[in-house]
Image 1: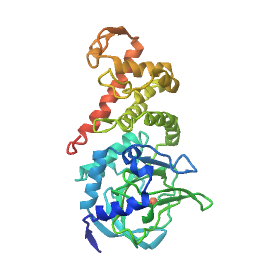
Image 2 (image 1 turned 180 degrees about the vertical axis):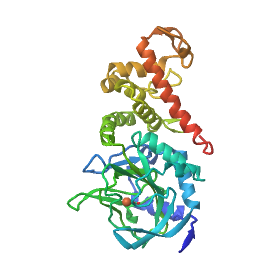
Image 3 (image 1 turned 135 degrees about the vertical axis):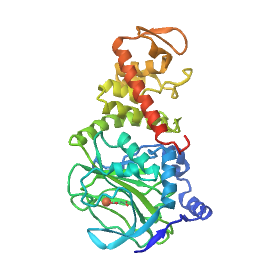
Amino acid sequence: MLKLKYSFQPVTLRESKGYNRHLFAGDGVRQGHLIYAAKMTHIQQASHEKIKVLDGIVPQELYQELINVSHSIEWKYWWTTDSNTAMRYWHHEVGHGGKENAEDVSDRVERHPIAAFHLYQTWLATHIVPHGARVLRFYLNAHTYGTDGWPHVDSSRPNELTTVLYLNEEWYPEWGGETVIFNKAGDIAAASMPRRNRLLTFPSHWLHAPRPLHKAFGGLRVVLVVKFALPTEAWDDIARNAGIAELVRFLDNSGSGAVTHSGRSLLTHLVGTCRILQSRNADEDVCRAGLFHSIYGAPITHCTLALDRIAVREQIGERAERLAWLFCVLDRPRCWSESGPLLPLAQGGSIEVSAREIADLRLIEQANLDERGTHRRRTPEIAV
Ligand SMILES: O=C(O)CCC(=O)C(=O)O
Ligand SMILES: [Fe+2]
């Protein structure tokens, strides 16, 4: 069995930049790289909402740590696809869940000496998959030119979700290597380039394949693959999340993807807070208020986006908007020691708040702190 201690040798920066400046001259997407990286994009002409491409979604420092890890782990050249065993490529096993595994392997990932794997698993569990999803497999695959994948399904069972995080510093169309997902007619339902910090998710029983790499690509195309069994009502949850997809787009367009919060984008924090509230069965208005909880800008010091209240009210309704606004204008945490109905404002003075609103605001604060606390506590070695 061949083993490779891989040391990452991407195309040199100078070569790659020059080459691509030529190719991408005038390409707004690459020039606006930072903005682009923070966007959540549905796949080009995705034929099905169950296929998702999420760009720039993994917290930057965690993502960077995963890239670093992928440069130092040991790769074994033995992995193959059941659908064509002649196709072999590089593999690094983490969860030790076999191809037919149906048991939860999350505790193995938790015990793994590389903390970033555990952190990523936790992040997926709190941001991407519904509460109660089980981790069936957790591994990294890598392809060099000539080591091809083959169309396959990851599971014959429905209600499972494959997540593919691309761990490549950069990617260019001429390198090939996209992941394609086929529809029942054998046409391409969706294709995703292995871009930096892109997460692709799709139902595991859909036929898919990593496409071959062009010989011009001299590096290693790395993916971190985590497969989940979803709880029975998972697709309903995902549809429910599609309910926040519009709102997420609104927030993204308002710049929350580009604003930093606890070392990540504010949007990541807002979505994380909303998902925690959803997992705690908070009512829809409270979840929506959680999604918008830090949006009103200066002069309110701890809030970061300047948004028009009327525009927000149109998006999330009056009750949710008032909660989101109160969350921004109240003097937190001092207000939590008051029993109401008058709560202190950050700017001085006070405001009358109902008992129900105080209870809702406390839920939002708890989710807000848990989301940030979770992030900090579980990333001790990653600077925030
Ligand atoms: O590398 C990819 O694009 C897809 C990976 C995959 O399909 C798998 O690991 O099962
Ligand atoms: Fe697969």
